[in-house]
Length: 66
Image (cartoon, rainbow, N blue to C red; front, side):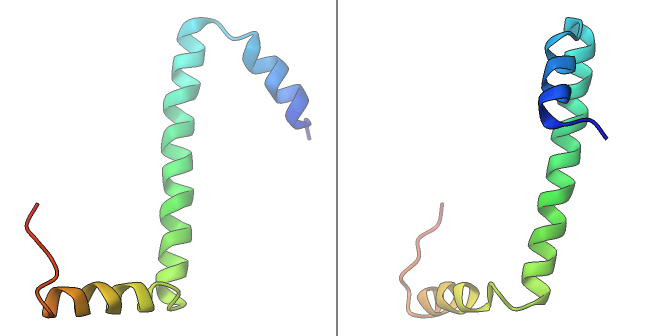
C-alpha cells in the first residue's frame, strides 16, 4: 500500500481534469464516511442529550423561525 506521502506526490502530478475528477470523487467519499459516522453516533445515543436540549428550548419558546 502506498504511503500518504506517495499519494500526495501522485496527486500533485495529476492533470487539471483528473484532479477535478479526484476532488469530486473524494467529496462524495468523504460525505459518505461522515454520514456513516453520524448514523453510528445517533444509534449509539451520542446525540440524544443535544436533541433533548433543542426540543426543550423549542417547548419553552426559546426558538425563532429562520
